[in-house]
Amino acid sequence: MRMSSDAVPVESLRVSAYRIPTDVSCESDGTLEWTATTLVLVEVQAGGVHALGYTYADTATAALIRDLLADVVCGRNVMANGAIWAALVASIRNLGRSGVTAMAIAAVDVALWDLKARLLELPLVTLLGGVRPAVPVYGSGGFTSYSTAQLERQLAAWVADGITRVKMKVGRDPDADVRRVGAARNAIGPDVELFVDANGAYSPRLAMLQAERFAESRVTWFEEPVYHRDLGGMRFCREHAPAGMDISVGEYGYAPTDFTRILDAGAVDVLQADASRCEGITGLLVVDGLCEAKTTPLSTHCAPALHAHVACAAKRVRHVEYFHDHARIERLLFDGALVPVDGTLRPDPTRPGLGLEFKHADAAAYAV
Image (cartoon, one colour):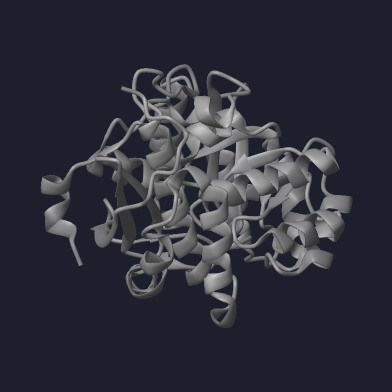
């Protein structure tokens, strides 16, 4: 029987972390190398119903949730999850409202939204108020550590699966970047959109030189061409980029003020935000409101299984990043993780909440 909207106290909160190796020995982008990804899982219970949320962070995030945030949440009314979010933000005042603290709040907030929707026996998108039944994705990977052949195979496979936008990493070697972008274009054909992400590796002037060279391969999206906090440099890139090439940044936004600064600086054509970093689904909806006020498109960053429902409810969302590492982990560890069909993610209306169940037995080997 569907629960009423009366007060339902959160009975328990449990947190765990899992470190999953990459599927190749090492991956890299323009400014970082990694060999594994850590998923921090939050499980909550109320009214006899179990729910979950997660972020991609570090074990320090799990410690913060266990040692501080769990006490803030337990006993509070999950139906008033906005009030819980405000209490979580207040609780980390002396720690700073970014990085680990924001990601910890994000994992908890996602779990509370999942719990509320499950108590009401509704898919999360229905609870949030759907704007669209499905959301487009872009395939994302193309790491700088890949050989040209690996790059071509990955991007071409997404296109073969019906995805019409793909993104690759650049930033290690400017000349090699141009050659790899050309190879990517040849692999995906003339009609698929090609995105690049420099992860802040270039200076503003080098970024714009590269943009002109990438334009020859019809690149339509240039993400983090310069360091993400250099909003003057981002605006320079936006003002000087070739026609038809969108400039984007925002994945390292944590609090609403971070996104306000980006928008007020005129630094982007499309703002990015990540609910696993920007204080959860509540935080992402705040960012969507900022984009609505500025008539700026929004794209969600990584964690596709986490974003599918909220992206279908956000007014300004253009697409969801179907990031290779996270999509692989979500298929590995969650039952119900969506896969793109005809280039879109479509939430399952028969599954309440996020529609995800964690595979504890499968995850046990990765526990940290």
